[in-house]
Length: 311
Image (cartoon, rainbow, N blue to C red; front, top):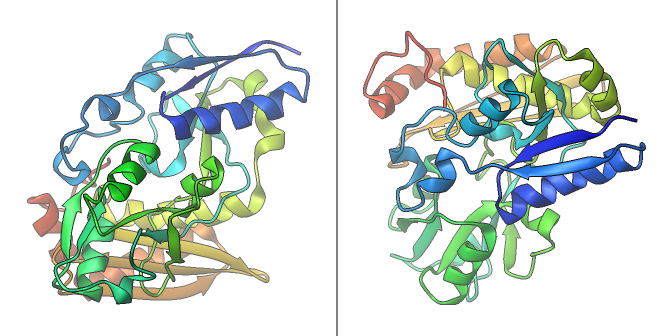
C-alpha cells in the first residue's frame, strides 16, 4: 500500500484527529507521515473568532500544502470547512461522527440554570454567546481562545465561572472531568458539522479517494450534508450565530436550525423532516430567512446577504 502524507493543524485535538485517521490507515497497510501546518487561525489567538473575519482561517495553509503536493490528504474538523470548497479540492470521507452537542464545564456550578447573575462564561463562539444570552441575559460572556488544555486551565484558575465547549473534543481527548452538563439541543443548537471530521484531498485524485473510501460513514455524510446545505442557504460560516443539527430517524432526516441575535433577544428556530439532505437543508434555511433571519444576519455581517459569506 502507498505511503500517505497527512496535513493537520498542530493543536492537541487536531493531532488526535490526524493520528486517529493515521492509525486506521496503518491498519490497512499504509505507511503514514503526519505533517503539522500552522494556519492563520492558529496565529491569531487574542481576538474572538467572530471578530477575525478571515475566510477559511483554519484551512488556508493546509489547502496550499495539498495544492502543492506537499501532503496527500488533510484532516479537518468539518465545521472549519467553508460550505463551498474550491473546485481544486473535495471531501473524500466524513468518518463516523462524535457527539455533536455542546457541554457546560464548571468547577463550582452543576448546570447553566444554576449560574448566578453576572457569572462569567467563556466561549469563542457567537452562536453560543447568543444562545447563552437568550437563556440568561445577565450573564457576562467573555472571549475564550486557545487549545482545550488552555481553556480548561483558565476555568480551573478561576478566570471564568463556566465555559462552553464541544462534547466531541473533550470526548476524543478523554478530558471529561469538568463537564457538568451536556446541553440539550433545545437549549443550545450546535454548529453545522460539529463533532464530525472531514478528510480533504485534491479534486480528481481517484487513487487517494479509493484508499479513503472505507472511512466514509453514510449517516455522518447525510447529516452533515443537510446541515451544511442550511448553512450555505443562509450564507453563513462557523463564526456567525447559526446552529444546525440533523439526525437520521428511521428512514428520514430530522433537521433543527436556528439563527439568533448576538444579544439573545431573538432566536429563530425551525424544525422539519425530509429524505433528501440538500433539499431539507435548503428548505429550513429558506424558512428561517422568511422568518427574518436575513435581517439578523445582515446586522451581523454589516452587508447584504446577496453574496454568501464563508468562514
